Length: 311
Image 1 (cartoon, rainbow, N blue to C red):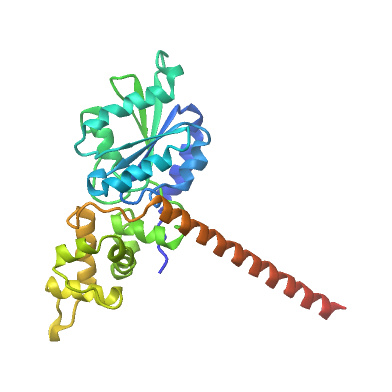
Image 2: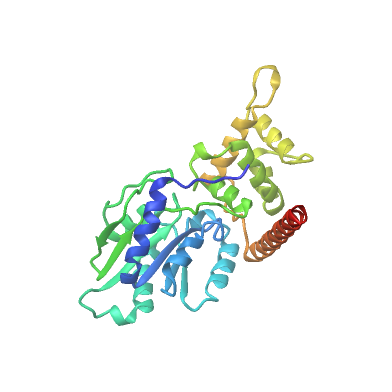
């Protein structure tokens, strides 16, 4: 099952962001430190052009610290990018964001207009919480579900920086499919747009390889079974997710697993590494190229058959 979720307000937000981007000095893109690649919206790169960007790896307290370091080194290979790992809910590093803005827009430091920074990111990545922390008061509405912010708003900070908050936007088609599943597993996609069992199965494929001990410790497992479905059944049995007749309620087991992942009860985990995503994207691009060649060949064969019929 492919996961796609692009509400109407996201399309509207994209158009509005494009209109005002010329007035922005620095883009602040919030990423989920557990899935830095999958939570990086390709539309952000298209919209910002050559504007400098601060990539904040939020929820770093839930992510694997060694993998987070690897992602920061990978991201900063681009000279226009600065990165910072933090937790928007409670982190002294939040004060460092203003300093990074000044470094990336030195020509605006002493300007009467100050620095204009736009915060962008996928839904439910913590933008509103970060803005409230930067402002030192509750300005942006916060909710533990995606798509709480529906429109742009500007917030003037005491340090000469004006923030533009934008709604969390996904892109119309979440590809490759694995990115869609990772986004769903961390809560960036509304639950009504996903099947819990499908998302849990896909997530467990990676989890049993990357963090097998986390599964063993959390659910008291001694074995994982032959596939993800059997592993989910084991989790369900350990958590008492049983229907009449002793049948495992796989949906309930999937819900428990995903809630444990999102809340950090499975420990500090990251579901993708830079090397892993480079390999995955190379495979995805090769698949697209093969599909394009097949479509061109089918088109040519159709044209040849049509030409024979008319001759």
